[in-house]
Image 1 (cartoon, chains in turn red, purple):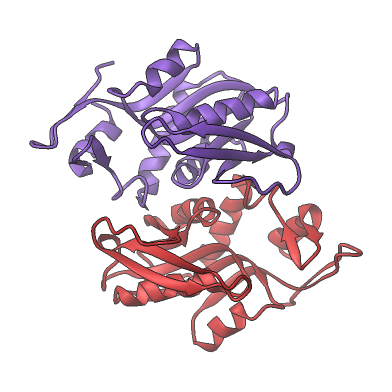
Image 2 (cartoon, chains in turn yellow, brown; image 1 turned 120 degrees about the vertical axis):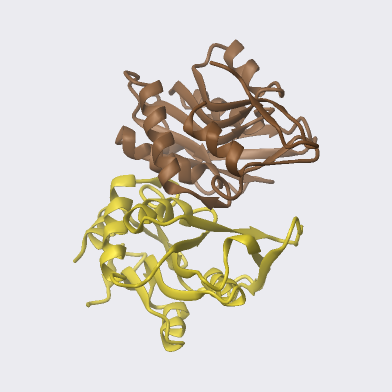
Length: 193
Length: 193
């Protein structure tokens, strides 16, 4: 078991409806020393890739991306979420529909921060159905840039997002893949490497 | 002139309506090496304070807070913004009204992440009228915690937020205070130390 899986077992809470609450260290309170370990691990998993930029999405991806960026020595761009376009300058806009909520959201990045010379590592905290991630990939590809890899803290392996992205040929690395959660006992089963 | 003021002169763009656009390095694309210098500077300006937690607000405060936290060796909590309460567990909620837009917003932090033993450094990217900051201060005080200091990247010195906060006795440090901007010439005047 790796350091993130250990931390999830220690402080994660399984809630009704396959919800894994990790707000004490990942997405409300943030353990920056843990993020630093995650950044180091991402650096080792994407070693040798010509990454020159990290792309994430507000809000909970930003902290992990910022600390990870220190290990790559590159800037971070964070995509904005919006319900409706408010075009101020030229933007890449990806419209993504949530499988679960049937709501449409827009993922937005200013065109000047992504172009065909960019080699992008996408970072986010969670991957379940992968709606936000699909929007980020769409934006990188609209820019003519390359998705060199995708680094996720926690993947819900029992939801289809991760498998679809791997099937499409992307290099996806999730530091912890949860295959099963039991809200009655609180038990969490991780995928073996 | 310090490193942040120099960077603002180099890459900041003055727009109509007293808007200072710094999205190429601060709040859309993020220069993490710059954030690290800012974190070091905050550490020196709040040296000796018993800070055990950093509080910021989504989205653009998170990156600066995360990197600054490394210099203090403390966790970060980021407050969430909402238009309406969706109480999941117990939350501190501060309702703040924007002076400019006359809109009401809520600033929300889970109660379990702030208590009377906490000594908090508040970090944010911008301070103008100070609406978000007032919400953060209100939340820290609701928790019975202490505001040890407030660290801001860019303060608009021609708007009242900063002066009000200093008048209330808070230790506010802004790395760059813009006293004047001229959209016709693009000139930016910083406050002298």
